[in-house]
Length: 268
Ligand SMILES: NC(=O)c1ccc[n+]([C@@H]2O[C@H](COP(=O)([O-])OP(=O)(O)OC[C@H]3O[C@@H](n4cnc5c(N)ncnc54)[C@H](O)[C@@H]3O)[C@@H](O)[C@H]2O)c1
Image 1 (cartoon, protein in one colour):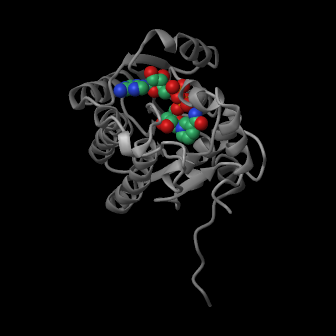
Image 2 (cartoon, rainbow, N blue to C red):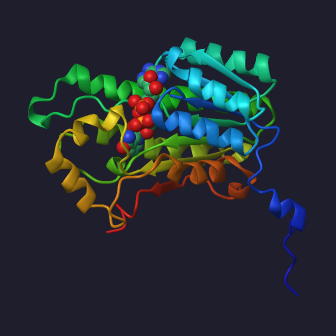
């Protein structure tokens, strides 16, 4: 007879998305997606440390999380600065006692430019925020998880542009997101021994300051929509379910996944 695998009770199954008692860090929490994900994690029970380079833009998200009865802090953190990220992680541990979920949302689009004349300093800035920033936040979360005895979730934010090239000047942004995808798989592989899950969410397009350059160009909007089988830009809450899933026990056997939440954009 085949050996029986352990099963959850009905009560445990009902709670597989519950984040009560967990502490989440969300970077870029003052921005569009970061705000939505920080609030979404709190709705499912997590306490949240909000990080962004600008503190004044986090007032609304802090208020909304407080209204949900969850503990919340807001800190000025530059994700490209090792000392800033390390210090902020130490503050999280002081304030909340632990860290269990790191969501690396902070990112920039940069100016899209033709590759043959791309300003290399602007190219580097995109790589620094999107790749170095993701690495530093994952690194300090991972170190904390190991110090806590293992376990923990890291959720990075990739992009359809990390899978597919695009004629519209994406030599910096696309490269940065491709790197985020591989970094996610690398960390998943390296940290599996600590039971740390590392996964990415790869969105298609949603309307924020980061995509204003596209939105301002009706021809570009048409091209983008034609590439999305579901035929629309994402709404912010389209990403909440994926984030809660990857933050919760429901995804304990999932690691190294780049979860496309993209209206089918990379399907065909
Ligand atoms: N908007 C889209 O269509 C789209 C598509 C795919 C992926 N994404 C990704 O989603 C994430 C969020 O993007 P968004 O559209 O919500 O943009 P947004 O501009 O609304 O938010 C980004 C946030 O990151 C913060 N930030 C920038 N540099 C930082 C730094 N050095 N340290 C700390 N914080 C910093 C900004 O202050 C801002 O609050 C990004 O990683 C982006 O690449 C966006």
